Length: 205
Image (tube, rainbow, N blue to C red):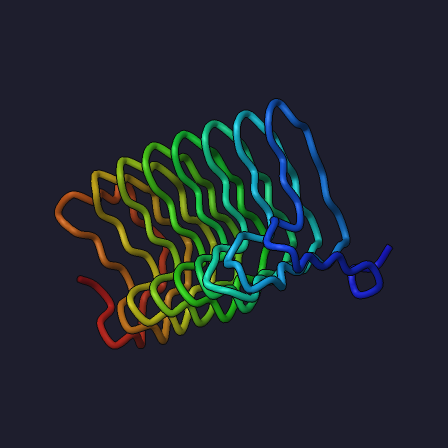
């Protein structure tokens, strides 16, 4: 059904949806709300789970990430809207993998996408706006591609690379951020082409 008609809310301090073990899962056309005062994520994906979220609307009330993906789990996130997260919209860590395509990630308290450890990510065709820490922040040997996204109004950087992370950055529009591209000495951009980086307080650091 339409996501404005099917709304799932949790208030007991547990995630709205949890996927663990070798689970294969898919959620479509739902609104998911974690509304407790305990600071837990809305969707928790772990172990070897393989999960698709499509055309969902997700939010989190407290100081927590909206989606956590850990261990060797995989996430495909398409055409969703994540808004109002006090933490990051998506936290990807350990050896997890994610394909994030065609979403709106807006009004985020930390990062739209925060990537840690040896996680692998593909971020394509998203609108990322108003993230208080950074649009995409990759650290700790993470590897990925960032292609054809619009990233704006992110206070500490649209794309922030450090900690031996590597990425390819192609065809993005990066504007009206405090920093456009922040690549620290241990963060590597393997290829950079067809990007429009302009009208940021600092385009590059």
